Image (tube, rainbow, N blue to C red):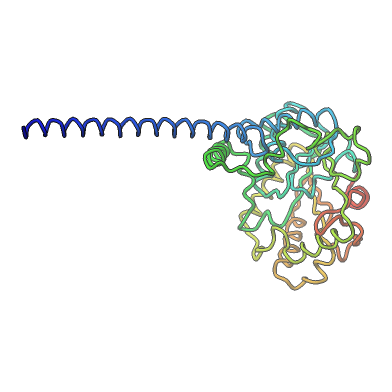
Length: 349
């Protein structure tokens, strides 16, 4: 009798274990199904928004449209560096009269400021690494020019640099994609860049009434800033003087980085004339902070650049606007000139 009871107990336990196993399997199946759906959605969102640095779908669409028309930009649909890379691919083996490389401070150089037949490859917040990478890419893809313009900025030669140049790195872009997809890291702003309705993000300039009221991206890659109100402009200038943009920690000049830029400029000057552009900073910076070590370093970098005696190289502009012919109205904000000032005072024809 006792043996029979034990058999019944063992049978009941086996049945319970099978039920638990079945329930676990069903849970795992549902969980797997949920995760597959979740990450499929996340992958789709990543691929069709400005986050996408893996396939550049948005950048390719934008560049294709930009090659047809200058565009009024309401909301960027791709990262600038990915857009520049795609434009380099599109212009493979092309020759231009001018090529411009550097930061947003050189992005105003184009047809609208007097430079016909130019290609502007500037990117916002460019560091020394951006300059070297963009120049390497344009050479790799056979883009040549009669004259190369590059802006030199003091933050190129400080120890801490902006790391957006990593957007040019394939391995880093894979890591970026996996992190965003698996963490489901998508914001409302990212969703706005889905290019199903292009007109909400950008439009051909010819279709927009009063395009001068908006930010414009020209076919040659140059940019026209969206106008600022008087108050907004004053606040932008005040913010720059207080925070000093990327020069907030510019306590010392790194000689090694200075040498890298010098050698790069010398090497390029052997194949085409090179113009180093020193775009001025707002005069109030020097009025209020002339004794600041960081401002002294800014002026020191200009002296170093001007001391180079490379053949086939010229330096235009100056950082020190206070003792030059630049006045407040020449500035869009604390560290960008107006298009008129670029055309009349900074350019050399």
